[in-house]
Structure formats: C-alpha cells, structure tokens
Image (cartoon, rainbow, N blue to C red; front, top):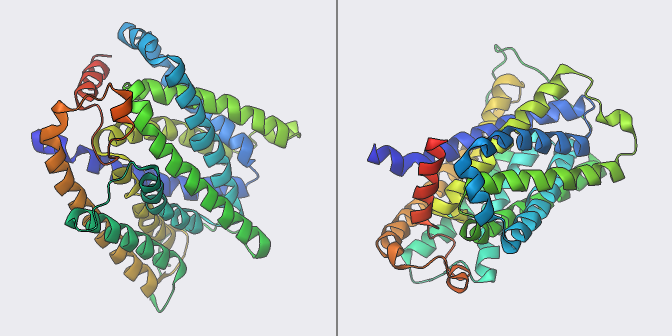
Length: 367
C-alpha cells in the first residue's frame, strides 16, 4: 500500500493525459458539428459545478466552508477562475476549432516550459546551475517540449497506416489565417494554464480542501463564461444542443473537468506545479496514436522520434524531481506553511500542506 501511495500521483496524472487526448478529439468533432465554443465552455463548467455540488451535503464539508471563504481565498479563486478557466478554456477551444486536435495537444506542451519560466521569474523556482537536479529539470523540459513538437510538426518517412480498423474523419477549415489565429489562441491558452498552476500555490495554502476550491473555481468560471457567451454570442439558437454528439461531448467534458481539476489541485499540493505540467506532453503521444488508429492518420518517423524525446525528457525531469523531493521531505515538518510570507517564497517543487493534505484526505474518505 505504501508503494502504491507513493506512485499514486504518477498514475493519476498519466490517466489525466488520456482524458485530455480523448477530449481534444471528441470536442473537435462536436465543434465541427456546429457546437459554439463559448456556449460549450458554459455548459462544461456548469455541469462540473453541478457534479461537485452534492459535497455540501456533508456536515464536515460545510464546516470547512467557513474557514476557506475568507476574502483572500475568494479573491484568489475568482482570479484563478477568470484567468485559468474562463480565459484559458475559451482560447483553447476556439484555437482547437481553427486548427486541429494534434495542434492543440502539441501547443499545450509549451506549458511545462512556460510554467518553469514564470516560476523562475516570480522567484518561486530555485535554480542552481551547479546542481544536477536543476540541470535535469532544465534539460528534461527542453527535451520533452522539443520531442512533442517534433512529433506533431515533423513527418519524415511513413511507418504505419492502420487501414483495417473502423475509422471516422474529422475535417474542417484549418488553413491560412484561421490556422495562424488558432495557433495564437492555443499559445495564449497555454500561458493562462501555466498561470493557473502557479496560482494553485497560494490557493492551496489558504484553502487546503482541494474539492472545495475546485467547486468554487467551477462556479465562478460558469458565471464568468456565461456573461462572456451572452456578449459574444447574441444568437440564442447557439445555446441549443442539436445532436447527441454535442450533448454527450458537453456531459463528458463537464464531468471530466470536475474530476481533473480536483486531481490537478491535489497533485500540485503533493508534488508541485512543475511536476503536473511535465505530464502534458504525454497527451500528444496518446493523441497521435488514437488518431492513427481511428482517424486514418498515418504514422511517420517524426512521430517515433518525438515520442522517444517526450518519454526521455519526462523521465529526466522525474528523476530530478525525485532527488529533490527526497531531500525536501525530511525537512517538511519544520516548515510553517501557515505563514503567508514564507509560503509566498517556497519552491514550487516543494509539496504543500503535507499535514493538511492528509487531514483533507481523511475527511474526503469519510464523506
């Protein structure tokens, strides 16, 4: 059990990337079917909020609401929802519509590098160029991002084409100005998502209940997205879901985001934002193989080289992370994470609220 618990963050983050890959392909099909991107974000966040609402039936959960709803906590969650959810999701899905599912997952691989850069600029990420751990994180990030982009953008010789499997075709206009706009929107989405990960640090210190903070971020983003959709989508017909594909996609995305937000918040508190961000390149690998299997897309030598680069970079960073985590863990009980001044300077790689996370886990298991 102890071994499983130590590997649990790794297992759930890999599963989360499978979800993101499926979501990119599934959602693009629904958008090409006529689903409005802004309306989709509203339904997605609304369904996620409703899925999390039953947690308030727990008396212990209602008690934790009072301690987590101070002005600082509410303000942080509102800003995080605005930047990391409302702006991020609208930019991502509009970019997905203009480009492709492969481009979307490839562009999201910039998140580790962006998170690393933003954290270093903000003074949260400690860089010691003479340290083997820091060099591993830097080189692993470069290798991981380069491999994922190579797999998505470089073709080379054809390796495999699975024509014998039943397939579907996802085609749409993704050329010229639309393609460029889509890539720019996906880039903006990656910046917003990196900011979301950085902001999880102060949120975790002010509201250690990850499920509760996930609910409030979903609620805030639902209201924010609805206001944005009403302003940008004057046609009320766009709010009607016309096909089973659009309905099922909204349900899948809504329930999926409720689970994924909780998983990411928990993993960030246990391992840090950079640890979670480094798993994003796996979604590109998964998307490539799903597309080759079910969408009649061909596999090229570039895909193989890129996949090797992604996995190699991921293990390099995880090695550096494991070494650093092993050194930080013995000193963790001595840190006072209640102190705002200290918590604002801690390394993003350091696990947050180790004692409180155990308390929250015990509370969740009794709900």
